[in-house]
Length: 160
Length: 160
DNA sequence: CCTTCATATTTGCAAATGCATTTAATTCTG
DNA sequence: CAGAATTAAATGCATTTGCAAATATGAAGG
Image (cartoon, rainbow over all chains, first blue to last red; front, side):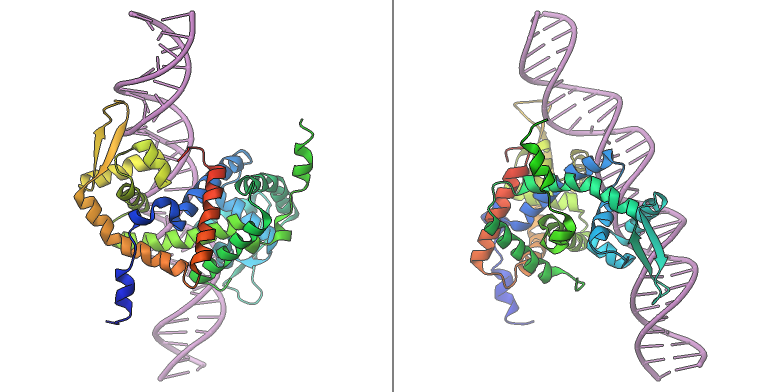
């Protein structure tokens, strides 16, 4: 066993000492739990599920992704995404075409109807976002996003 | 309709303009998606599910909560928590006692075995946490947590 | 004090989820 | 270049989830 690793492991602070409200992962779960739940309710009234909504949101920004890439971006299990795409395709909001460069893969394209659908739900998302950061100055928001980007870079498996 | 609300709604920036990687809720979902998935795998090998693990984590810090409070703290649907507690109680990790002051309610207490169980899984959580914030200086972490607390205060429904 | 409304928890049930497997295609290796 | 290992996506299936209803208790109003 490595000598250097030991002190690090022994130095782990206890959760109770830090307190839940100073533990970033806890706070982030609390926040996203509420954010996603509230968004899910809004989406339900528009006939969309969370996986469908996330797929549309990502595709509205980066179109023509492979399904496995979309799964990473949208933070949805690949099998769940596959079924969400069945629905979106049936509703004419996206198209699945075989990837010309790799015939195992499928590229997903958002349709005009899909863009229109996202346009109708975006104000709801934007409203949630505005509420989250209400009263937080621009500089603080920017610093926050910068840290989020560093954290994502630390833990992501894929390089996107 | 209120005059003041209109300009705000029209001013909503588009997601595409901001880009996914500058959109805080997106980044947080990406981060927590990976964090929770990785933790879930680790917990599975210890025979615990995410709801069980979260309940134990919260109780290790704040014991004797009512179930509905625990559901909020642990970010678990109450019906799901109810079933997770069935499991934890059967394994002797927590106890459910009728609340003396309100016999509709149940207070949940962590047992010694429960604390011990959490002690064994905490190093795993701490390792994930350390990895997330590797290379991020103390001051930046503190600012980040401060912003998280403000955001939570903005969106939470309960005052805890 | 009784009726009505609200709150805490559990449970039934249908739907959603995710793991593991399958199918199909690509890449690697000897 | 044949065979083995890898990757992309879809699907079968058991588990999990969460909504809604049921149960039980407490609080409020006339």
